[in-house]
Length: 408
Ligand code: C2E
Ligand code: CA
Ligand code: CA
Image (tube, rainbow, N blue to C red; front, side, top):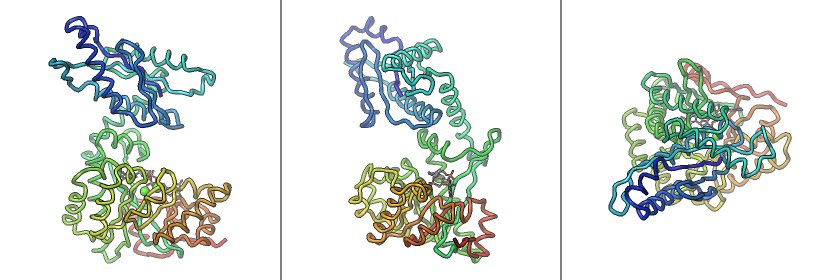
């Protein structure tokens, strides 16, 4: 994505306070822009009060890329709009931001000048719409970004309106017996129907709404552990997804402590699923937190393993229990030799490190047999069961019969 930024009414500052103040403000703006960047991004000043940000890797799927970019642009907008203290003056300024996404399907031959022009055009639209705004060049991308804003608005009330619920997906052993489950969040929107967590978790993460939502998921999951215990059908463990922002909260450990105490759940039955990215971000803090959780008896897994960039050296240092092989590898076991090799390698590496393995997204007989032959201990996927509501899961748990495994 290319963001074209122009500061609103910057000329007023130059004219009224002098160019030296304007210059110092521009330097301050540049500082804030670079603070917002990831390593792979680029910021430059085009001239005057015009800046450009080049964001790479915003996602392959266009509408998803649009919403990711909207999130990023909002963050930039917020940061630039905070008060400035420049050469003794208290200043306030807002940006108008135009966005172009590339490469576009419409015109594969577009070059950097085309993209710059598109972002510039979109920026003028932001100015026309009253400044301090974000506009996309393509109407379809604007629609995707607007939809994201709609989700954000509704998400603020979703918990209070009791639109959220938990589904549970069994995790089974080699014989197909339920040994645990993963909690998966569901949002039933009053107009739009079910919205996938893949669509609203990133929004929740970007807006901070993940904190109350994540708290609720943890609390409800612990209550569920307790309820199954009370009904005489204890679950081996219930794994809850934790998002990066949640995990990075300084009081995260205390929060977990409190929830366990309040709900009367057994910490030994609670699991947390972390992702590679969040673990690596701040390795010192991460290890400390993971150790504290482990001492409480909580089982820790690395989710979507193989999709991040974590090195094996890190893995060795982390107090982990489980590695979850990402479903993208499992899906291609049959068709892609290198994915099959990766899966094999992950399993044997995990064994060497004394870790359990759960394969995600197991859908077919072939996948199950392949994994079974390589001594994968745990399985999760549609082959055994989809994520189901509490009632349905409780029935399965009660029977705790083997889930169907078709020999093949
Ligand atoms: P995930 O943690 O990797 O969860 C597994 C996803 O794969 C789930 O999608 C599940 O329904 C789906 N799945 C399970 N078995 C199969 C299979 O055999 N084939 C295929 N194709 N898919 C399968 P879901 O429920 O839509 O969740 C998507 C993602 O949203 C999750 O990915 C997780 O990252 C996030 N998420 C879900 N619930 C929560 C939550 O409570 N908190 C946080 N922070 N994130 C959550
Ligand atoms: Ca997960
Ligand atoms: Ca996963």
